[in-house]
Length: 179
Image 1 (spheres, one colour):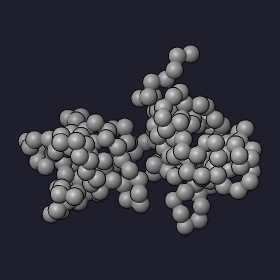
Image 2 (tube, helix red, strand yellow):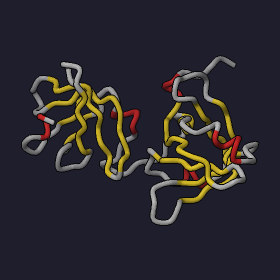
Image 3 (cartoon, helix red, strand yellow):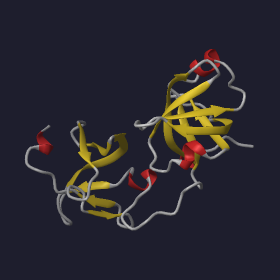
Image 4 (cartoon, helix red, strand yellow):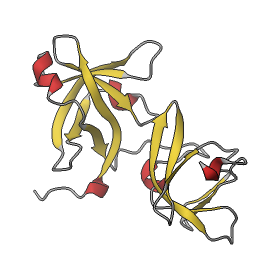
């Protein structure tokens, strides 16, 4: 079977540490769908430097109380040493594993590559490169001059997303664009 294209995958988290002595992994999620970390089934891990994703079977998972981290158990990872070798890897699902969204919700893959504008007819402020989950979601925007701009992905600042037209509107508060 040929190696899947990178567009076939959704990054839903990153392995940030080992938990305990029996091979459990701590996952920092980049998905708003907790079932990706709690429902058993196939998941994939990919080294941060690329390479082919490796299929793993999620046995079980749980969210740490009061934290955004999940602790998961993967088949074949039975001790802390094995878990530690996976730290830093991306936690993936196949791109067709996309939950149905409500009005005003978007998948990361739909936002990446969108042009960012200050008004509907305006010139490009940059292009969405990533969505960073850090308590609040932040759009990582690559500016034409090469600088990176982080913009909170909240309705007050990003009131319009035009997926079919390939752009989104930002209405930044004073000073945000100068950071």
